[in-house]
Image (cartoon, rainbow, N blue to C red; front, side, top):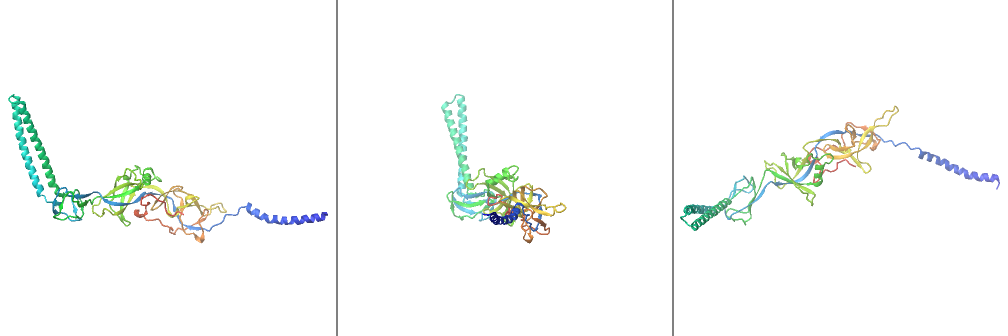
Length: 428
């Protein structure tokens, strides 16, 4: 092969290689030199200021009203019902006679017992006189010891007879008293299956039931995790004493009607029910107007007596993601302009530690300082999406997209049927 042929062959190989190299250079430059960050349109939003707000932690529980006292009335003695002195559903005072069993036979037994006691007491007096005479003669050695022993035995028998007669008299008095069935406390009397003339006795069954009207008890279960929160603290919300008895107790008959009287916790079970993981609790409410009826279901609200100050954020501003966890958007200075000063505001992600939910917002336990501006979810103009670095346009006159809930404690507080705090709203 001649030199000319060799050079010509190599030129055909080198030229395609140069063409490929020239095409690759722009690609390499684009890889080595990063492209500028994408620019988003301004997002039109509203702002809220992180502020310290006094709040009261509260929990809702479903409770059932029960009578403070409830007694089934039965006849203690047998006889015919002479009179029923109370109507069904009527109120009675303690000591009122409700049912009268014919008392004549018991009055006669009482009179007989009184007579027997009088006779026994007369015999005791005679035995005592006899004993005194024999004892005097015995000391003068004018009577044998056997006479003294006999007189002592007669005196002892007479004394025992008196004691027996006294016991029979007491029983006769009780029987006569039992013939009048009385109210053991103030309350309302149920209907009775018996009528005047019925023969009743201890085996006849319940004459009627009396239940107390004032006060009434609300019985409910408190989950063990809530007890732990109250005793040891959840987001700094523990009770100073760790005792449920220190909570304020309110009652809602339904979602629109709050009961005006405040109650108090009177019983907390010493053990947790292993079947429900709850502790039985009773709260007592005064019921002077008898507006609360035993047996009905109500909502009991347990609430801190003293408020505590926390930083609150609007509920629609608190978000959540798998990468960051709980977070909010706050305002940050925009990029510097030609003169070096920040140009407007941009959105910045701020991870936070979320606390409890309240009617006025969500507690921020950590991550925010008082005075910082929180971005609410407002209008996104021009299809802009709120991302870190997005320019912010503040809409001062725009109402929040998700306004805060009202302050109705029966509607706005945390809790399921066991009244435990739950997660808040606004999370994505």
